[in-house]
Amino acid sequence: MANPIRCWKVSKNFPPEELKLGAPELEEYFEDWVENSAELIDPSILIIARQIENIDLLAIDDEGQLVIIELKRDKLPRLVLEQAIEYASLVATWSVDKIISIAEEYLKKSIYEAFEEHFRKSLEDTGGINSDQRILLIGCRTDSTLERMVNWLSDREIPINVITLSFFVLPDRQNIFVRSSLVSEEVAKAKSEAKKGRRAPMNKEKVKSLIDEKALEELVNAFDTLDQTPAISKTPGLDGINYEFKIPREDKPPLRRTAVQLLLTHSNKGQLKVGILANNFAELLDIEDSDVLKSLPEFKWKEGWRREIYLSEPADCLKLSNAIAKILEGSRAVID
Image 1: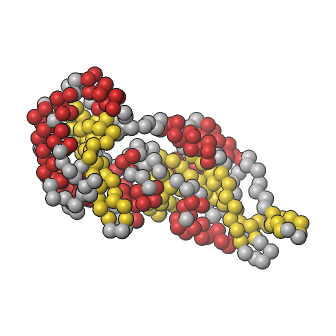
Image 2 (image 1 turned 90 degrees about the horizontal axis):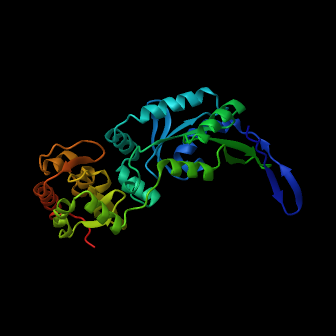
């Protein structure tokens, strides 16, 4: 069981004075405080919903994982673990479109814009929205049984933690918060990163090796049209080649968005897998996703958080490349 937290007031001319636990009347404000200052429990999360399908708070972390937050104003009971696991399993089934809708109704802005403003990185540089789920249990007190269960799950690389927020009363009757976590932040972060298997973007040698190995040269070269399009630029991606553009903002740095992905690691020999992020085109052009899709060739797209297709003919690749270049004609994308 976690050691009980003790706190002292110290000053130069007086001996240390131990503070008393107290202020239970403040516990009713727990949820408001966590919602408005999520760094109280985890500096790597952004709240995206409150009281959604019985989940107290829902957040996204800096790697695109959804975070289920369950709060109890008093002692955390064992039942809260069962509830949180149920909610995590439910959230895991949600489509990306549903999550975006929930988040944007709460945030009153694009989740991609909010993510970039909060974390100073693009959501597309992560594993993707809802790539995994984490659980945070928040309360004033806990017990040895719950702690043992959470430690057991954490040891098996289930991303879960217990955060306790204790109130202490100063001599002048002011109150302070003291935060502690069952699993240290360093350990929790290391386990999360190991579980996700973070990868760096590919280098040119790896890209060339995959193109040669899978006989994709003609298919990839058909996208050279995009290299000649000023509004878009080529960058290395986690799975191959990304084409990106930048959306201007008044008095703020532009937003970097991925438009097209040549997914070399997921391609087959002679079949290039291509991903299109229609929502990013829609944000740039201020139109609906459906309008973007109407401007693309009528291939048999697989729907998801990005539209995907396997192409085996250079002519089809060129057709798609030309359509994308046409969509970007006259757009407001920032040109470097």
